[in-house]
Length: 454
Image (tube, rainbow, N blue to C red; front, side, top):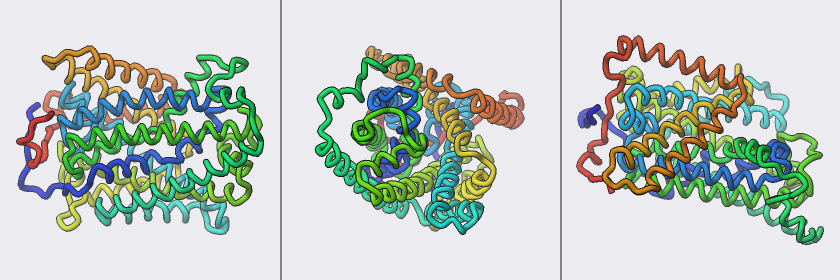
């Protein structure tokens, strides 16, 4: 499958710096991501939340390295779709891209659902459907302004969430100094001999990896980032590291403040109750509001990533090029895709449950993660003259970790995800007359074609 360059149609504009891309990834993942899963992971892992977060960081860093290294070779907006299609097989790239469509489109959907439900707690008189329409429209309008404007929004949201994280850390430390826990209490979140069980901790780790889901979205901006062969790798790894460090601090302090891994009034909102215990009613409300704002930021960023993924697939002929591969001549954005994702976010917000949406998101994400790890293995080991052990060990370890997480999904998600995959395969078979013709064509941006990968 030869790479081609298109120089006639309008392309995307390189305006994003390393820190623009990093802020985009942090907001997409959310600095407050562990707050939402704290209670569930605490119960599954019997209090060893920080241990599961660290295990998850190790697993996701392996995949982040594979994403970053593949972006150095293929600076394309198609992300995992392009990597797998170029290194393994165009058909597998198409299946990966189809899975990613589900992943990326579901993210703004579940953010729309979550934001709408939280907003009803502040203004209960507004109907749920109206909130769904409002947030879906908000995500769409923010992304119609152009990618540089979206980057500025990401930076403001990231700074705001960091401030709330600092406030929680300060309140938690003040509470702990007053409570004066023992030395054993400080070590218990890492390892409690009375409750530790490796299967339980690994199950918790499979859920804790949700803290990092979304970092791969950085690679969809490869055609809008300055020096993508360097900055995509750095931004992806930095996002995972920063997220992991923040998550570890948050869940460690939360576990110390609560003092046990049971007794939450509501498991799904456990962290909010921890914040209330540490700082009182004002922190309870502030964290609630922050989670709402964080999901607005995540939904906007996910909307952006979904539109760029569809653009990459449309330009490569995996989806109809006329619609999905079109770029608005004035703003240089894939306008059709932005509007389509907004319509789907509204429809999904009215018809989908948050739980099933989140599980389906993982179904698509882990397929993409496995594909990228295998692509990195083939590129840097099978086809390379420099067969260093780490070039095989790192991507293969990442692949098997992601495979374990994928197999741990509940059966409703596996069935629904399997149906989505079947529909995609049928569409691809019809489009290519039984996969006898090329599934996709891969294009390298004209400003990158003459550069050698490091």
